[in-house]
Image (tube, rainbow, N blue to C red; front, top):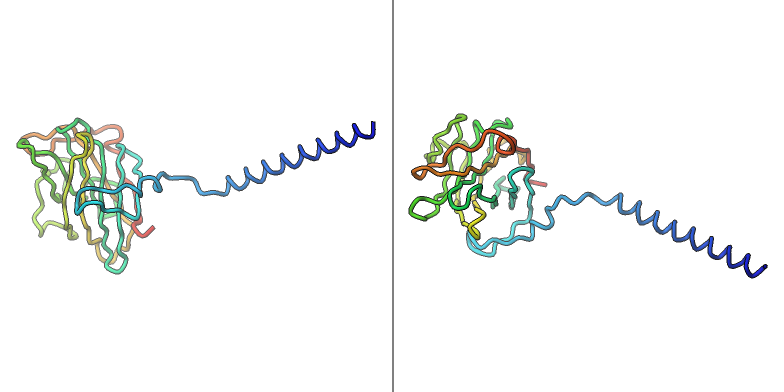
Length: 213
């Protein structure tokens, strides 16, 4: 009987130790920051814009399946970006990413870089100013831009995704936190991006980003 009692106490003690270990692990896990998916997408390299470029930061955007990769330089308040987005309709679609310096969560006032495939098969990519809800989507003249945009390029990946590259000199005196807007459309007519849908994710694709974080 004594041996049986000793064995019972040993078993009970082991159970308590196991439960304690499980509790400690659970508490430790609860203290870990939630994964945003940024670690996975920040390891993505790009064949365009010089080849093999790696961006230090990445944001998995909440709409349209897009991601934004970027390198921020605090000394000059500039950011180099690679915007990746699936095309809504194979080669016929277009994608765009930009910053609204007014801070409004709106496409109106946004300075964007748009990319699409022309009718002759070449890629078009250029800055444009979204000055209304029915913008021309025409290339912007340098004097039309609220802030400089350079190193503009694009590539089409596997017939499914477009990548847009650009270097942006962020508006002076406004720090590193901005409202950015991204978009995709399913049609290009006579080498001009046609209107995107006005429901669902296409009207919700805006957020605030701090490039210094």
